Image 1 (cartoon, rainbow, N blue to C red):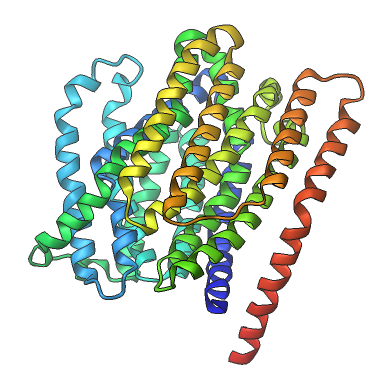
Image 2: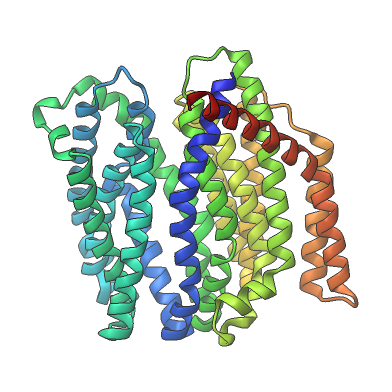
Length: 472
């Protein structure tokens, strides 16, 4: 059991170095993006990249999830895993090409459709290579690739946006070029071509991977509906200006998504082991409660500093974007918790339940968007997203107990949730003395959740340092 915690901490630290540094660079670039692109162009470029992300699960048949789940099993042949992944991408992309005439009818995307398809192809292949490296256990290379790809994206952003003045096209093209360079780099360093062979295509393994991955296509698309479809509703029901503000505000909660993604990447590796059911339940319970405490503290801190973040990281013309952050960050927080619960389905290879729960959340999100955006504007979209993620987390938390029973600290969870709602209300309404009230509520969240977090980190780091000392 001790080794699992040490392994989780070690992998988390490695992913933190790679992911945090790369994502922080992108986050700080938001000031640059908002300076070189007006609100309308920024909103459209964000819409284009997110639309490409809708097509990627179709092009990949979500095989990247199968690469991780089956690639982490040591007894599985890595040549089979990688070959199936590459072939699945090209088959999925061939199907996607059939949809080209239909997508051409969408006016917003028609001028950029070739670019979107190129984006989808390069991103799909990059994800296969990137996740296969991780499945092989080469987490340092996985992390370094994240930094490399981000630096390349930023350099080409500056070249295409400021140098060649390519605007929206330059923004998307910089991502494509970075993906291509990432594929080349991983192929050379980790000798990926030697893992690809048509002779290695094992029908039994392919069926197993596809049975796991295919349901996740719909799950991924519905996740996109919850997190991104609000932009389409805002574009059609409101204005491009409001869409641009909303797109900027949605970037701020990435601070929390960033921390969560670092942990979840390491967590997925740690959960796949030969522990007994009792050991797994203890592991999930201890880590889950600490994870929940961290998420709630991040939500509270981001709400408190939402105006400051927008003022620092966005052009002054985007300052109004702060008012969408409180509800969006609550939604993002519960999305992080929902992803943690989804790891139980991943462990049990129950991808159909991942799909079913997210379909329900997506349906709820669409209905709430239609009802709330006309009345409350972009904040109606933020509220719809928050409610959908909260509902999805609760459903998964209840249903997944049939596999692993996590013993949550319910009283702390409920009280902390109520405090976050109060914090959002006082921030958005800007009542008299709202600043000291916000600070007080944030302090309450820290007091409620901080003790377990400090204790857990002290325990983990002491074990990790003890292990390092023994090695030396």
